[in-house]
Length: 108
Image (cartoon, rainbow, N blue to C red; front, side, top):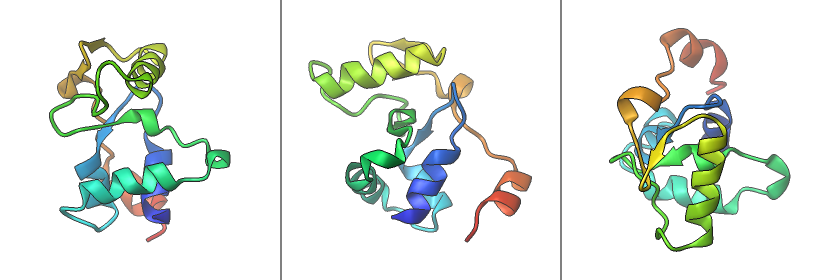
């Protein structure tokens, strides 16, 4: 879980990443649901930017009538991410870490 938390903490302001991509970067391909579990179990004191994590279709995964959905949308919009009916344009907002970031910053 610590690898997932570290990667999520690296997602820059105004960018998003998918559960699957985070799993891949953590060396856990195919474990997108594990990323969700890791985010839910992260201690509040970590203040992880959980709201920058969306599904692979570029959508907020929470039910659109739920409080977490509204909260995630508000956080993203406050960072300048355009959210239209729960959808984010990945071509515009997806975090694409370069090789230097991956090699020099990931401690694993």
